[in-house]
Length: 218
Image 1 (cartoon, helix red, strand yellow):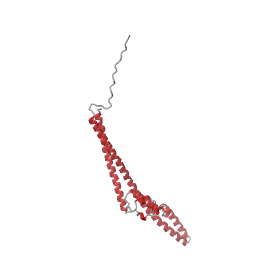
Image 2: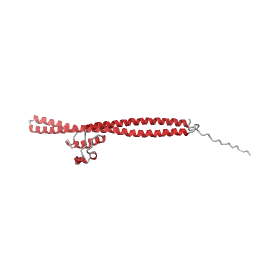
Image 3: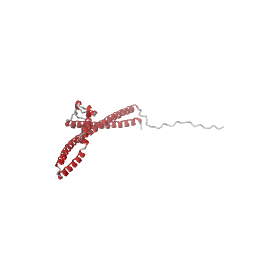
Image 4: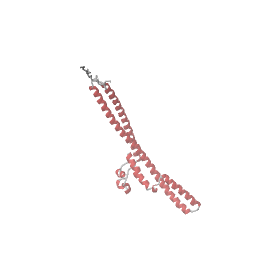
């Protein structure tokens, strides 16, 4: 095969690959923009604003991101992660001794059983006290439910935003790959222009002829 022909074939292939990489980059960029715009729209609709720096409690000031985003409106995935884990999560730990919604359900069931037993035993004082405890636990459980729900929604938004971030990073790699392949293709075409038509590729070199020496007889 002629070297010029090989250069043209390889360069054309590289040019096609560069085009495919460019298309992949555009698709990934579109996905990244969609993810970021969607997350921003959904989070902005919640109208959540971080507490200002002067209103943060001592515990909240220990959370670096709460200080960083103090006073800002929540619109990004990173902010959603911070608010979910370091604000809501922090306050959930101080509610009902850190018990979860499911765990508080077990406590409710136990109190109801005790109230039933006290009522059957005509112990009205104990039943009234247990009823008050049940009301407190029910209120705590409602608070935990709302907190855990909002926390989960915010973390879902954060996770979706991370897909957008990864897509943007992959798009950058695709663009760089496309540029590299395009430059290699151009270099290949230039090389084909300066290569003589007669030059072959991997043509075996002819063996050097060595004259045979004849022996001289005495």
